[in-house]
Length: 284
Image (cartoon, rainbow, N blue to C red; front, side, top):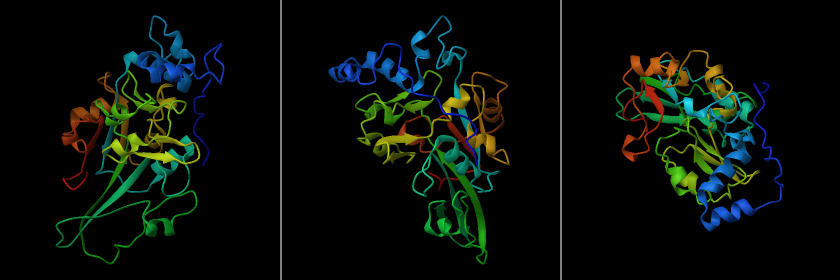
């Protein structure tokens, strides 16, 4: 599968030398606000520095102050095909092994008489064994079992309103955009993995090659161009929904209007903007 689109480049602002580390030193000295702006520039290009009358970001024709993104997942529809996982890897250059992923799917199976479900994901060794090199799948281990209930739950970064990963990052590499996304600036990430440990959803991993933290970005390079995230685009059953919550006619606004939604681990106080239907209390 080819990439759906090109990822944004890391063009430095005009006049800035690639070896200039003064911005980082200023941050470490305490100039957080100045460095946060530099971080946005380094990860998403010089357009943010222009910030004209419309407050454009990250491109001249996109205004991040006019959007408020949200994500919906209908576990009643998910069939566990894992196309979303593979599409995400192809779109965002995620390692093709089973231990690195920006989004994943968990299988919950209640056997007859059981009070708790059996849970596995695409990274379980038995599922890896039946998967093709570039196509993940679940095995059929329960075909001879008496199953009372089973469902699949897609998971990813929840792009929280109060993200703990942002709070613990010592360099400002993890930041929240004005339109609701939580992103990582690879130029400022020092690979301390505090954010990986702080995320209550296990939604971050460490990229050993680049020596930095990585996670779902909602395919920010796509949504800022009016497209859906790759996982939403590829889903054959419409289990994933994305859109602008400021637009009452958007798919996510309709999803929130028509359903009584839940979020994962609300007791943590992160206030996720990823909303679920079709899950039970055992999902966390």
